[in-house]
Image (cartoon, rainbow over all chains, first blue to last red; front, side, top):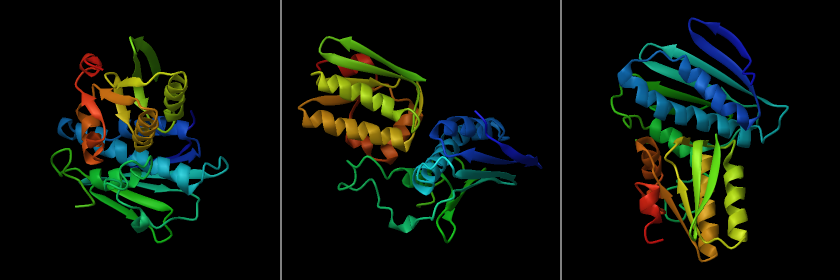
Length: 154
Length: 110
C-alpha cells in the first residue's frame, strides 16, 4: 500500500497518506520501524507512540477529512534529541479539542466513540493542536521512564 | 489479520487474530451481530493472538456489549496481554466487561 514518502532528510520522515483507514496500520508500522530506540524504550514506542499515532491518523481520516477519499493526511516525523515528534495534518475545517468530553465518566462510558484523543493525551508526553484544530503534534520524550510516564493530561 | 468464529456448546467464541482497529472493526461487529440475530446470546471474544486494539475497536466492543445485553445475553472478553489490559484500565472499560485470563476461564460456568 503506497505511503508516498515525500522526503527523507536527516533521518526524519514525511508521508502523505490517502484518506483510507486501511493505510493506517502499514503507515504506523513503517514509522515505528524507522524510529531509533534502545531496548528500554521499545515498549513505550510500541505502545504509547503506536497508540498515539494510530489515533491521530484515525481522527484525521474519520473526522478531519470526513472519510473523503480525495483528501490527504500529511504525517511529519522528527527524531529530535530527547524526543520523537509526530505532526499529523488533515484537510478538514478543524475542531475544538477542549470540547471533547471525558470518555471515562459514568455517563460517557457506554458511548462507542470519543476515546482516541483521551488515549493520546494519556500516553504521550505532549499533545497540542494548532488554532484551527486540523493539525495535532504528538511528543514522546525519550527519558520519561516507565510505559505510562507520559500523560499530557497530567 | 482476521477473526475465527467457533461454537462451544451455547457459547459463541470469536478469536481475534492480529489487530482490532478502525480498518476491520466492522467485520467483527457484523459477524457477532449476525450470530446475535440468529439467536446466540453468550459470546466470548478472545485476544490471545491480538497485538493491538485501537479506540475504534474498543468502541465496537462497547457497542456489541450493549446490543447483546439488550437481547438478554452477555459478552465476555479473555486473554488480554499487558498492553491491551493497560488500554482497558486507562479507559475504565475494565469495569464494564467481565475479563478472564484465558478463554477456558471465560467459558467456565457461562
